Length: 324
Image (cartoon, rainbow, N blue to C red; front, top):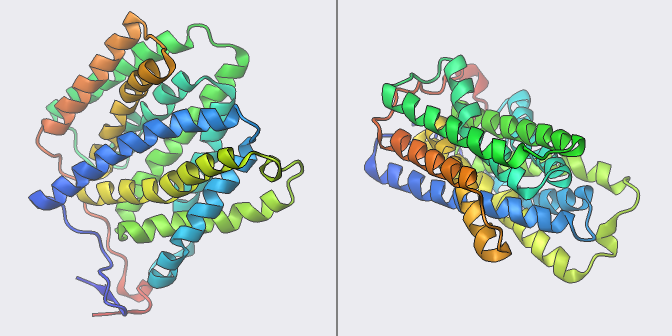
């Protein structure tokens, strides 16, 4: 295994080891909880005195500062700048800004379905198109069930959509596509999960904060400290740093397609949370969709793991600063 000068393994662990798979599954469960909370807390923040740019600033600033020591430790010598920028845009700026815009324009129920619920579909389509995964019959049935479940939930939540909500729905789909792309790029680069997360967090911070400093009407200066604490803790720490790390760790252990399957459970978890916390009773169609998505995820996860092409090794000449 290649190692950096500081003795840290460059490439992610190979899949197939039972312990590695258990770690990946635990990270996948953490992703479900974090992404479910992301929808609810973001909608809560956008309904307060904070604006889209303020919440994004909290996410990128806190997450970037937390992950800066990690990036300084790993460095960027083994990563081409275009690859680092692609990771930062798809896993940071592109995903977050599109998601916040979608939450601002569309209801929380749309976010649960169109953002997180479509992640397995986008990831599967991108992986299949790039020939980085093979299609098994069991997985195809599971993805089909997820698609039908998402379609049922989307029909239920979009039936009364306005023009404003349709624009928000488009932003949510772009955010889902962006995060799906990040998962595949992270797997292809073969970086350590903490390294990939630090690249996303720090480059997003350095790209966004200069723009925010020139942005007029910053509500962050007058918002109550309770709102800043809640959004700073959740957006900056849990989403801006922890969620990127655990998702990257799950991708390293399970692969991008199988990790994305976990997010199919987010609409169901969000629906249950809304029932207990907000007293929102789901319709029969929505419940059917939740059941179909859950069954599809279980079928896909319990099937034999598909053959996934390993990340392409870069030529030795591009691995600057490495030693055997």
